[in-house]
Image 1 (spheres, rainbow, N blue to C red):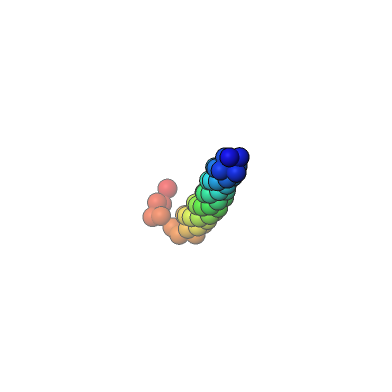
Image 2 (image 1 turned 120 degrees about the vertical axis):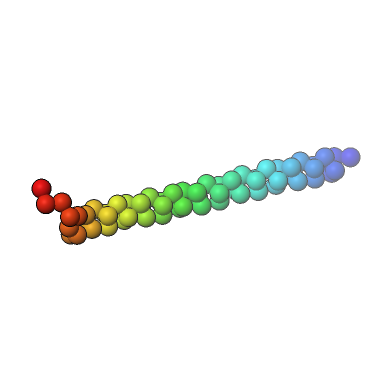
Length: 61
């Protein structure tokens, strides 16, 4: 009688471990996307600032 209970506990433990691993993968992917998005934002702001300095805006004040 002990064998089915052991198997059930093993299956439940395996399911919990697999779900935690999936959560970790999502967290790592989210962190990677955040890093890339921040890099793109910084690059876009830098290009915009350089363009504002280099290109005249038409004000003759």
